[in-house]
Image 1 (spheres, rainbow, N blue to C red):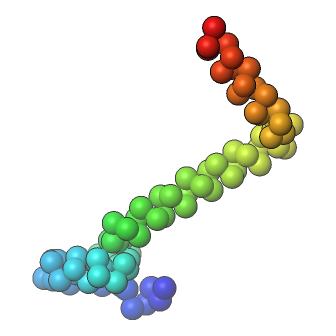
Image 2 (tube, rainbow, N blue to C red):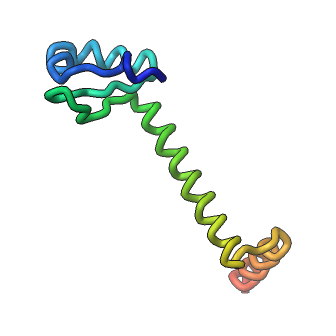
Length: 93
């Protein structure tokens, strides 16, 4: 994405809010809004936002997994299945 084409002053947002929302929605884009020449807010399509949130969640899971491996707290797949079977057997009693 070229941010240089996606930067608009707040006056543009005020004057063209509905058109801007339509444009962002149609093109799945992100817009940077400036105030007094400084970037202040980001406006983006909801789908883009949701994808970003999903990506962040996956990165957190990967970071936690890496930390567990580094701390030697990880289980093999066989051990994990055994643990699940044992828990299931206990709950059936």
